[in-house]
Amino acid sequence: MTEGPHGHDSPAGKHHIARPGGAANGPSAPRAPFQPLASSAPPTRPMPMFTPATWTVLVASDRDYFDKMRVIRDLDWSSIEFPADVTEQRIPLAGPQMRIGRRSAARDLEPEIDLAGPSPDPGISRLHALLLARPDGSWAVLDPGSANGTLLNGRRIAAGDVVPLREGDRINLGVWTAITIHRG
Picture 1 (spheres, rainbow, N blue to C red):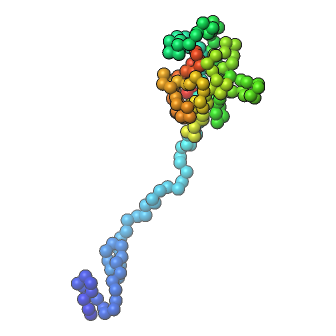
Picture 2 (picture 1 turned 180 degrees about the vertical axis):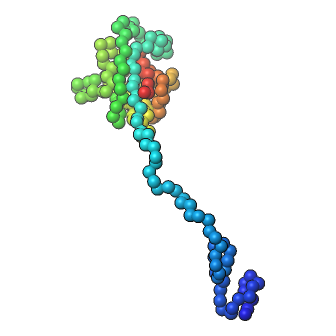
Picture 3 (picture 1 turned 90 degrees about the horizontal axis):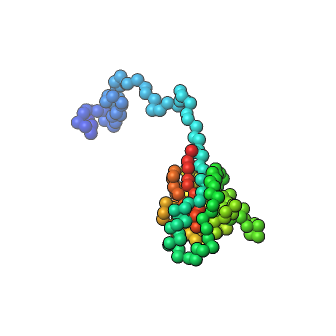
C-alpha cells in the first residue's frame, strides 16, 4: 500500500474515482429523485395570438396652424384663404408605406393620403411626406425633402429623418393641413 494524494492508503498504481455522493470506489449514497430541467409538454392554456393594432390618421384643416403660418412665413396671403368647407377624413394605415401629397397625372403619382381634394392646401408638395410601417407594428414619418417642410407636434422634421409615431401625434404640413395619428 502507498499513500494516495489525499493521505489515504491505496493499492499501488490504483487511482481513486470520486462518485456522486462522496464515496470512492464503493457503493454510492442515495440520490435525489430525478427532476427535469424544463417541461417539454405543451402549455395547458392557449397562447394569445399577436394581433397588430390598427392605425388610422385623421386628416383635417387646422385654423390655428393656418394663422401661425401667416405670421411665420410673412408671405403675400391675399390670395390664400382658409377653406370654408372644412372636412375631416379618417384613413386606415396599411401596407409598408403611405405616401402623403397631391396626385399628379403628369408624374403618375397617386398618394395613398391624397390632399388634392375639394379645397387643396397650396403648401402641399406632390410627395410631401411618407408614413412608414415598422417591424413592431407601429409607424414612423419621413419628410423626403418637401418644399414647405413637415412638423411633428410643433417641431420641424429634418428632411430624411425617420421619426417614430405614437398615439395622438400631430403632423402639420402645407398651409393648414393637420394629420392626427390614432392607434386602435
